[in-house]
Amino acid sequence: MDEIDLEIIEELKKNAKAKIHQISKRLGIPPSTVHHRIKKLEKEGIIKRWGVEVDYAKLGLPIKALVLVNFDVTELKRMGKSQERIAQTLQKAPNIERVDIITGEADMLLTIRAKSMQHLQEILFKKVQSIEGITRTKTIISLSEWG
Image 1 (cartoon, one colour):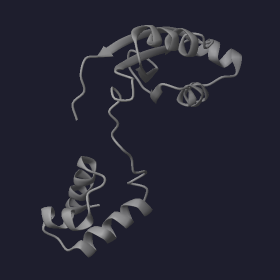
Image 2: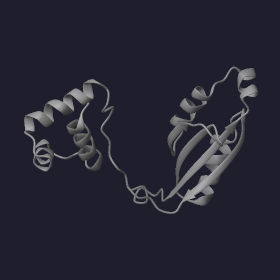
Image 3: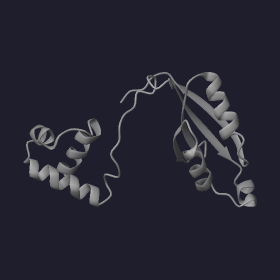
């Protein structure tokens, strides 16, 4: 991994659909170099997947909530559950876009997309807070997204 790889990654982060010749022109390197380096980054697992940026408001999901989740670790152990298992379950739930296990004030961070505040409340009560071992949630509403 060198500076050229990092520049290619930055270009792809800006626009994953950018053509190899466009990246080549912007970085001033041959298209064949860009192509081979992208393939190498994929093979090494540095580029894990290709995705799209979605306009959730146009999908009828204008509300983005970040939810900090706290667990009672003793209770989880007693039930034979783990944070990872709960994360896998939550990741499969509709409207839960992302699940991160974190350190600090909370144990997990959820990104939830909802069509209304009532819908968000239903997701929180029925999908999140109903899970045994979760002791507390703290919801933060995103007012706008940048980048």
